[in-house]
Image (cartoon, rainbow, N blue to C red; front, side):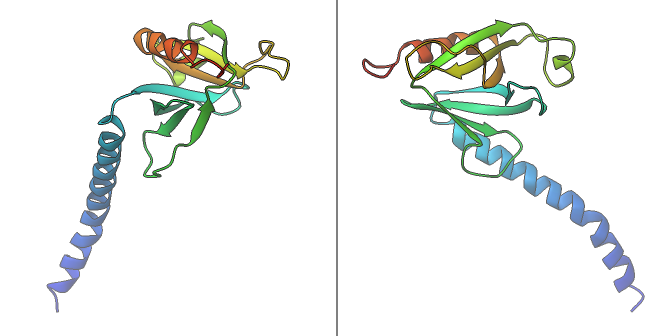
Length: 151
């Protein structure tokens, strides 16, 4: 009977480690499944009003939408979907000192929004994305290469 108490105490110490390793393994497998088909890039996202912090994620380009997935999540569906139709890059900037708490200094920050009903460009961004220069080049190419009739 004296031997079962230490075994139970050991299990209480080992269980959080096992659960953490299982979570990290599941996150890694999910990311591998998202990346293996290509057409994706790592980027940060937040609402343009800045009310929420930057979240790191993985964006996958589709023919009509950009699907953004959180990195540290097991949810199989995208957290945000940005429609390609009418999408505009509203502005571009370097990370501000306030942004550097959640971003690295080597990224570019862009604001994106959608055209108005009359087709005019938006005046304010809805979301902000932060990504490397090479990822930004790919993003801009994706936005600009929409098929005829899609703009």
